[in-house]
Image (cartoon, rainbow, N blue to C red; front, top):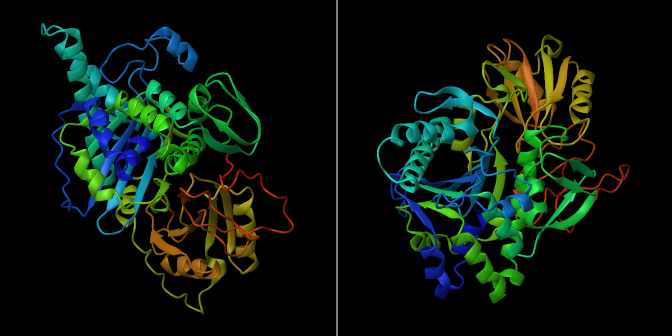
Length: 473
């Protein structure tokens, strides 16, 4: 999906644009034409990775291809949307934000299906539509494509409700399309902190930098078993992989190589489903000046990664108001915090610290620094990866939050109904460089020109490097 977008925004090979557009499958999803100035001030594109065993036109994938992908049989997988990304392009900002949704995010599903994991929104509506159409007398391929349309519409409505955005365009890719795209570019550079071996996904990789493609690339982005944070680590895997893919495509080696470029166009045109109203030529002209450094990858804010649900088992907690605020803030400077009252009694505040930076042990170090400054220590723990650090407080806890953010060198402060009255909870994002960080710092986002660049700590061992590619779990 990122490949398709970059092929369009680079403005290259216009003589091949017809070959790209003619092969795409289109669906009439009744989305508004974004135009040059969307009403809500941004172009929002929903990018979907489908865990289905069929191609973009509904035909079953050959078993030999499924065997190569280690994807089971044609009846496996269903229509779960295991990769969900909102590509948010604010007007006049010159930047784009690719926002990931963990597949297990527990949200309200549109269509009256109740609260479930977000990756089920498509399947619920598709199956319902297929059941209604099965005795209609329509040919099976027509029933398949109509029910898929219902699934896509329900997923779009679910994401719009969750984020408060208006989806302008929709793009969908399947397993075999991903496979072909990675082979077309000659592989993607990635890096792992430790070696992994997982029979479920087929992932079997050594530690350190490596180049992967085809079935290995699919295993890399699909693995969640055996990772410290499960699905949340998988989201980080997908983000660094997309950053590497975009970086590779924007390099001269792919864009100027006619064979690779043609292979890429063939892979994209045969695997992508778009909304019918998307004038991709117009879109390409609008975005042709965008460069790799102007696209960044982030993740929606989440809570408990092991939320127990009535029907869906363990899920990822999501607070809709936080997601809407997060999306609305993309591209905008964070709100400033109020100065702390110098007479405030720090011992009256119990502070919890959540590590959302990916740096082991950071929460404990930061909590110790706060206790040393007179605050009462609460609990530490891990949280879903966040780009920006934030101090959240409960009812009547603003004064304490101001004191905490000031003690940590100045952080964004916001109220959270899930924090107990009078308490304060600190979320340490990848940008954190205050007390207790021991030199940890970063840009807060994954950019296409490399991973979060962190100043070296002379006392720490040198991290594994792959020419700027960030090493992940």
